Image (cartoon, rainbow, N blue to C red; front, side, top):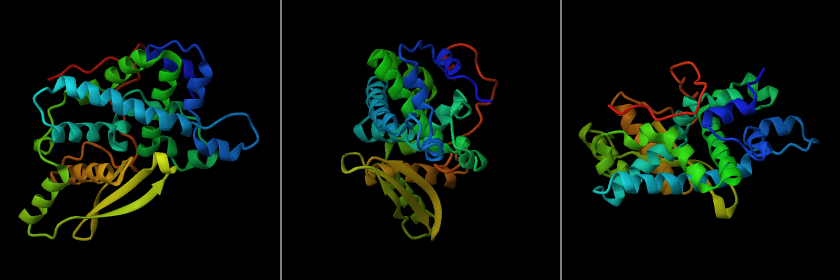
Length: 259
């Protein structure tokens, strides 16, 4: 039995004026596919809006938190946070997958624990908060959830374009430059969603997503660099989301203490 959506709202510290928005944010398209004649709507439209809200809030927070960093470093930081892999990690902190309503086939396939599904659900959840409570509350929720990522001391890839750094790494290893291939393109013309895979010596080493090919390639390069370093602390977009590491909290989420 799934935990009630109200429990998730309490963990976020939000009292929804329209609980239906929260419920919709937690409906996966696989459930609608198995129940096509109901009045329930999947969370895909909310995902579209939540992606934009997340990008705005994270961009502003990084701009304020790192006043001495150039555009490239800020772009890399943002890509690491708002990529599917980064959002999956954030969603795991509140055990978001356990609240997701999926179809029976998707349940058997383990979709509720898949990183890309958790990331999309988080986007929908952010949109629901934004529509119900406004930008100020949505910003507060996002910053509390993403606090550890905003403050994290990233490795050297923060200060150089990840694709350039990955190419240098390949040359240093005596290998050919990495190649990128588009795995999938979805969404309408005004809201494209790209999935790109980076290959080194013909072996897939990272898969990223983004609203355009460049951001998807950047995300893929970040994951490939971490894989080469032996510290892939962010799951691939098709991997199960990491466990939160502790029992679910009973109150509003607060940032983890910085080191």
